[in-house]
Length: 605
Image (cartoon, rainbow, N blue to C red; front, side, top):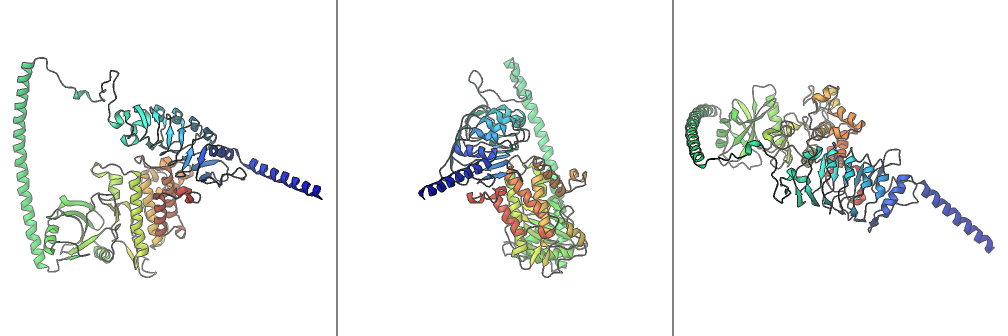
């Protein structure tokens, strides 16, 4: 009997061993490689507890994503895991790897040169570790690389010129290391400035405007034009007389020019003063003739009398114009205490202007939100109706994104994300927190105003609709701006919250691409920005979608924003998310993801 039990136990043990062996063999080469990489990590928190040799597939392991219907590893996302140890050279066996994110850990040792064998890599995040040694020159062979972040490590040596070969590189961050020598300006490296290299005390060169020491230990002069070379006189006496002559001549010329300029300005001043006086007299007659010309304020925070504001309003001229639209003109109004306001002048002679004026009053007079333009008051004059708003110093998103007014710096990626988030908050407030709900009907970049901190304000409610009942938002004439309008709205004239969601999706694409919805590049192919995006994503050409001025864009957030935009612009309005859901998704994109969030939301972490 005992012998029989022993035989059964032995057979069971052999069977279990065989089963374990079978499961182990079920792992693909990529799975076995991941176990080799794990073997070089010091996983003190046991974050990789489900990386088991007995698993049939590695694609469900923490931080791992695979290609659809394949067992090939596409990305490794293991930031903030407190992983120690080194990065195994086995990483080079993952030939289809596109994203490697090991930032904010405690890894040490060198960056393995074998990483260059992952020829499809698009993003490398290794910042905030303790990595040592030099930057492998082989990284210059990763032709698809768009993001390289090696900042906040202990890397030494020079920057490999081979990085200049990475023609698709959008983001380069080598800051806060111990790199030394002259920063090369080969190829794409010439496009990166101080932010990419700051915190390396021994680096020098043009990108950081720090001259390098010459062979004798003196600072080498940075390149400059030949015109900067001083002319050294050979005869001191003659040179002195010569210089004195030049000075006297220059001062005489300057004096004559100054007198002429002052005379011209005085004539202009008198002329303008005469015009203003005449206009002021006409305004006074109008106000006396029409007692209804008075100021009505909202929110009770305008510290001026009606007469003070009306006086300023009537003195506005073409010199104060900052924008114009279908129903009127927008002016910049400066009060005596230097407070600045925007004034929308709606011309009464234009058809439909009364409805536009009344609708803005009806909506903006009853609501207030940090991401909606703030209506301060209104005034009715015989010739026009005037709306007074807080002045937005940076103008509209359309201006700064497409016109680059006042030679402002292009919007970086983080600023674009903040603008998208703030605009979503304003629109979500209209859709979900107002009673009755409000459909804007004209969401576009020119109706997103920006203050000095690039905080967005949704504006221009002249076409908005209050959703009091089901018929309130059915119109006979389609309103809005072509390119932003949802297909079902174009066909039926039925404006709903989902129409706004579609327009917001187009706005997101405008922020990502830097192109207007009806850019000529789309029209040639018979597409708008939505069709163009879908085509390029289908061809896996993400780098061609992102605005080339957005050098700090990263693949993770770009893909996440494009996914949100694709959902918003779904042809079926029922499949589009609500603005509350859109807002939630954008907040997830911009917020650090907790470790337990990685597996189910890899696209957003």
